[in-house]
Amino acid sequence: MRTMVIKRSICIALAFVMILVIAACAGDGGTAGGGGGNSGNNTGDVSRPGPGDGNTPTPTPGGGDSGGTGGTDTPSTPGGGDSGSGSGGGSSSTNLSGPPGDILAKLLADIAETGVELPMLPPPMEVMPDVSENTIGLNTADFERLVETAVHSMPLIGTFAHQFIVILAKSDSDAVTVKNLISGDGGYDPMKWICVWPEMVVAVESGPYVLLVASRHEVVEIALEAFAADAGNTGSVNTIYEFIP
Image (cartoon, rainbow, N blue to C red; front, side, top):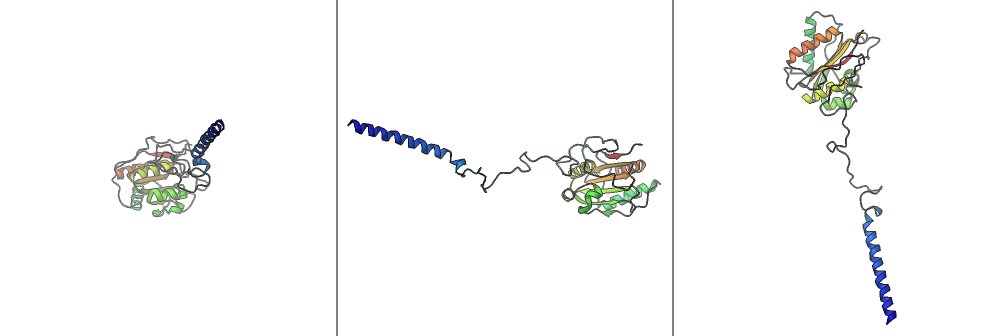
């Protein structure tokens, strides 16, 4: 009888040990067995950071990438120029309308009426996305994402540092973004001419339109006044470059 009791006790103890082992294995199956979705060879759905989950870095003006509504005005000033008012805000109302080529043609006519001397400029030419980075300081991806169309006019001879650009963005907020991108590091290049450079380069927006002028001080001032008169309302002016002798 005593032997039977001992055997029964041993069987109960072994059964209890087996229950503990099975429970431990079941609790560890999520990682060791590859069924929990975290194993290195798992090819199921994996959650990745998206635009709205706070894990995607916010681009900054002038970095080549666009972001938000352009942030604040922090343009590069290689010539020691003023960085503008710093508000970064745009003008949501404007009297401007129509294609940017018409607006630029009117601006050039207004400048000519003042009698200021300029080299011969060709009619406004459309800016194509694949050359937008060199032409206006906006890379192709940002151009296609933010811009409806853009035109520019500059002397055909590279020894005259003058350029006039009008950009029609896809929205008023996109215009602010465009202005800040072309004003920042990696944006518009004021040193792209041969052995010459403009005295001043500025950018300003009104509604969805952005104006960039690279020229002498007096020409830039006249252009800004004419643009403001035609637009009725403008945002803050970004001084991208200014040469101070």
